[in-house]
Image (cartoon, rainbow, N blue to C red; front, side, top):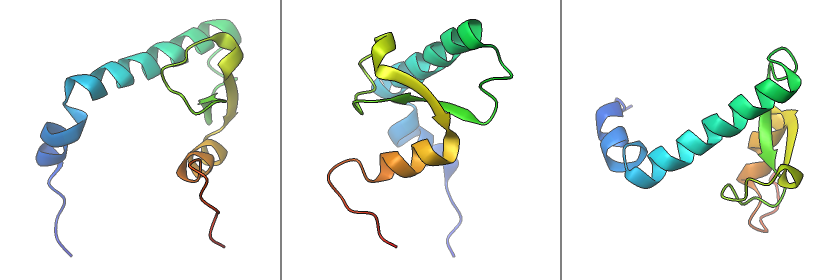
Length: 84
């Protein structure tokens, strides 16, 4: 198996200006939720965007859900059916 090149991944995707802004906004959303609900409440949880739009930061579009549920949900949001 080929070894992952993390530096190349960062330079080609994670290090782009667009991705840096998106990551900063995710971090900001999480910090706001920690201030509102407390760090212990968010342990093992993610901030979910109900309408799948990560650029919609309205409080009515966000909810706290289990990390595994959120990440599984986001894999299949484009009309795909889940494989069993």
